[in-house]
Length: 368
Image (cartoon, rainbow, N blue to C red; front, side):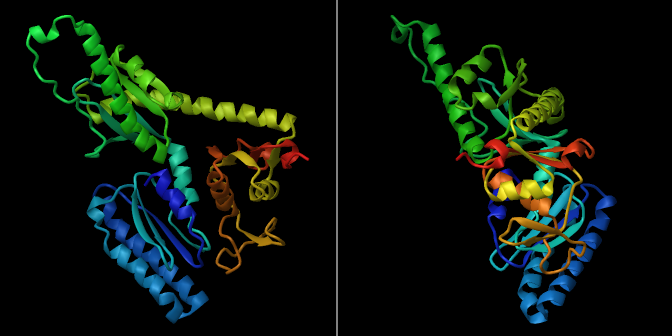
């Protein structure tokens, strides 16, 4: 499940929107417990829906949840499972990252866990440049899979017709080869562009010292390239590839976190920030946030009061007027408006009450 799919789910506004998140296991015997936990979570969702809406009104939602659950073959589980159901939406997704078991019934789907997982394990792409067969991989942590799309990747250059010696008279063979390399690099860059525009991720290039600069000159996404691995690896395994790319991604991720903390310090000095969930909520609702920093374990149930800018803390997350996690709503609001979100270990943002926002203007208010 990629960021584009999550963003689509974030657009849904309907009550009830039911989210069921279930950790699963890839191998036996651990995956034998997975259907038991999933049934328990579905039972919890059913009981809450019936208690709030009555059996007749709740039944269509419950039936859709159960129909999706019946499609699951637990012998093919990954690390998590997500079910999202409303009156108009019914989706089931296998996840390559783990989630906490959770049932959320709200006006929006519970996507924060997915966004957090994407940020925590940092997804990336690795482009293996090879003159005979260029391949694209997507990874997260130590896991990496090849992108196989008949229309895009892998890419092999078109065979060139054989020419007689007379046909090359007056032509510099080196210039012909250079033109073919540049043409192939543009083809690869165009294919990557279609994927990157839909779901932008940091990119690591793998290839010879000749191919890497040729591709860099062809791509529109040079700023997304976070590192390179020099060499030719036509038969490299996925685990070997992850071993070469993983440290580059980890170092880049650490730099990004440190840089955003430094940006927050600058924003505090310039009075362009908000700290604490109350202030952050108000500024996000006003569309003022550019980057959100939040501790990984921070969740807060709340009621939204007034004109939507005032929060009242709540304890009963099952109450109809309670938002299960207002931090989830903040994360979604920042992403929907094109802002960045980075998660930090618990305790990292203590001076900001666990959550901070860099805003566009001084004091979070638009200029007069």
